[in-house]
Length: 189
Figure 1 (cartoon, rainbow, N blue to C red):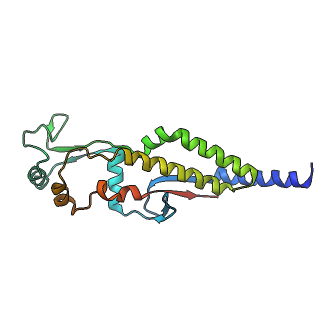
Figure 2 (figure 1 turned 60 degrees about the vertical axis):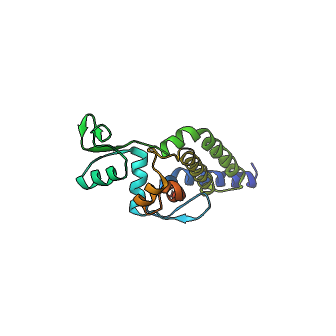
Figure 3 (figure 1 turned 90 degrees about the vertical axis):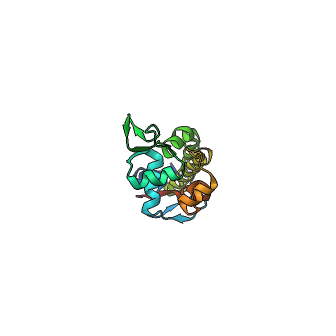
């Protein structure tokens, strides 16, 4: 074998070793990540909590203040049916609206294709291991943003006036704030 082939094999072996150490995290992150526009984005604790509620859902024990407020907004009647958990009165159930797991499930083939193409580029010497991770991270963020955009319908019909009163005019559905904070982060290497 010629020196060029040996050097190329050594380069490939080095990149494969680096690739094994890389970890790609996709979602709403407290520390800097990169969104699909290439911008570094940091989410605050409230946004992280909201993302968690969307991803997994939550059941909240309703306080009297919450009951008065939600009743005044017309979100439920005091018949006990719309605020029950397993027949137990006094709870609000916010259902799961998974956007990360759903994006992975529905976008897996696109992410796999991107990974294979990036890996082939790495083998050819066009990009390095971090470039492979960048391509996969971008594809995963695009898949997640696509799912969120498709599923961006409110669970409960809530008039524009009610939304303004309840969220100071800035619901995530209208502003895209949560959507814009979907990022990827690469660790290791």
